[in-house]
Length: 277
Length: 288
Image 1 (cartoon, rainbow over the protein chains, first blue to last red):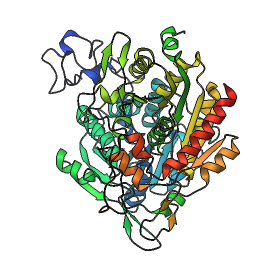
Image 2: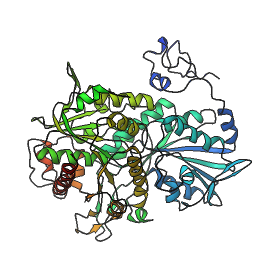
Image 3: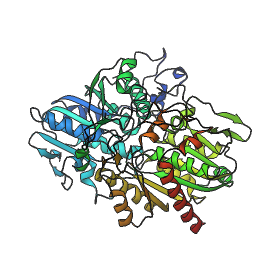
Image 4: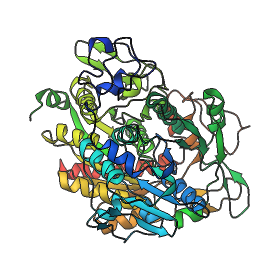
């Protein structure tokens, strides 16, 4: 299936062709950068992934661009909240820094294999999780992988895991706009991504990275559901005054949302109890 | 594989120090900048190389947003943060057409950019080259270690916040350093406590003590603990780096300095980082 983007150049060879991004006709195309750095040729695993996920209604990516804004914490909170009334699966594709097993309190669990594939770890009856954190020999082991190997494990999470029928599948991602992000978008191309929720903290140094992430979503044609401003204000437990630890010097997430015409889904304050939990 | 052109550039640089974490958002870039400002204040010539290609924060922090890199016969000329040319900076941030542009590259292209940063930038004589890295243990980290290995970099400073979820990633980063033979120069526990400006009560927003415990456990020098300082956050955020921030007293008369190096000396954290750099230099003095 050819998927020539609407904004591609006239003589687009197609993003899957061997000359994608490199052909003469690619010069100046807004997608050139993405096409020239991806592997060419149709992926035989895509139909398998689509089949595995055909009983999953909504797939949401939790993105940021900036590290340490609370993607994993937010993903866990969202998963817990949704699982009160829905079936939820969480895929932790932060291969270098898998935080979700610890955050969700299932650190020491193992992944079991059956004839149907890998069984995800069940945090509760309606909440399952898959993370590389469950597969490391010990918690200190570093995952020093280059792109292709990281892509391989993400593909396995989608192709080989025996997910139950899910209302929501949430993807916790690492910071940045790199291999993991490209891979998950490409692997879910046929299956479909409902959208992305982008996390930020209020200060400009975070918003700068978030602008890039928004640009990535637009380039990769991932619908943006909205922005969440995390660590938005801190109430001192002593005197109850509010301080802005990460000040919104350029207007915070609201200003960015107004500028780029994206919904602001909400603001979450800093709560020291979460750090301790 | 040998890279003599990198060796040529590094020949005029006394110390090469990487700033690593594993965990995102712990303050690698802000610690790199503070180390640089602290060293520059002591008269050292410092270069800051930002190899976080997806999220380059250093230009904004040093007040160099929107500046351009120039090409000379000797190579790419870095951007200077001060008129005295004590503090130079190179980042992909200077090469992007505008601040919204994302860098959506897979590993090989990132490696090539990092190699260019090491081989083509004309740093000149430096006392320190500090290399700010992205979170994780992946292509960028492997690339920079691979290209530098031949030329014996001094080692890595690890930055963490105190809480368990950060320490988990940092342990992995420490393991990475051990695996690739990169000496561990020390660990900084950042965001260790927040003093409420209204009542002066200190709340451990991200817990406390975890970094020091980890350093002890893994036998790494503990360089120091840095609390959250709203004036530092403001300094890194604001565009005009010559105005001393006074977040708790915004109506007070503004103090204006000559450069970001001087402005930083008015922040409380500069005292802590003076001690951190002194400890770091003492450690480097022993090994070289």
